[in-house]
Amino acid sequence: MSSQLDQLTTRIEACTVCVDNPIGEPLPHTPRPVVRLSSTARLCIAGQAPGLRVHKSGAPFTDPSGDRLRDWMGISSEIFYDVSRLAIVPMGFCFPGYDAKKSDLPPRKECVQTWHDQIFAEMTQLELILVIGQYAQAYHMGDERRRTLTETVANWRATFNEARTPKILPLPHPSWRNTGWLKKNPWFEADVLPLLKAEVARLT
Image (cartoon, rainbow, N blue to C red; front, side):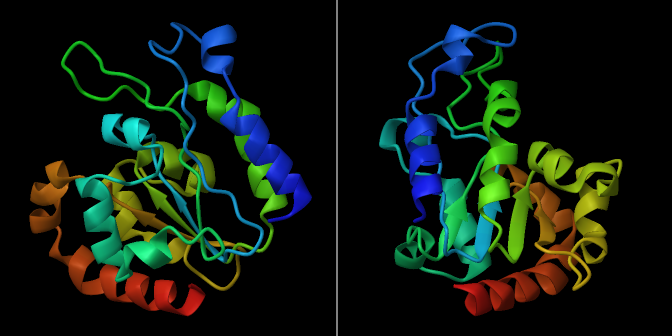
């Protein structure tokens, strides 16, 4: 990793902005940022925010969603967690806590405002970013994001093209709660997953 990214990682791992200078209510627990920056990886996963299991483990996607995502990508845990091959930059670095219905809160806004532009300005070697869920898609796709997640993912060819660097491939969240969505949208498994597996094999 470059010295610039080393320094950035150190600063992020020590970040407490969502407690010290929060937007709205402060983070309801001690921050534990989870992020994987890389100066050599050509592929990056841009997800939402860590869940409670990831907060406890300190490693990204150590949960059933991670199992499904690795299956989609067609790679082993060894490759997935090799930071020289794969960067992981969620929209929120810390578990945001639960709402009144015990669902995960949205990613903290402080992370994007404080860190994301710096991170992607440094990781210029990236060739493909997998953008998972609406918050990642809003940041990385801007006006190219469609009205719904289904429309955004179905329109993947608009951002996955040779005219842009890095290319962007929008994905639904690999949560098991989205099993119904996958059944309703069989084109995702038929059209997108083969491409995803091929690109992951090429880039890692």
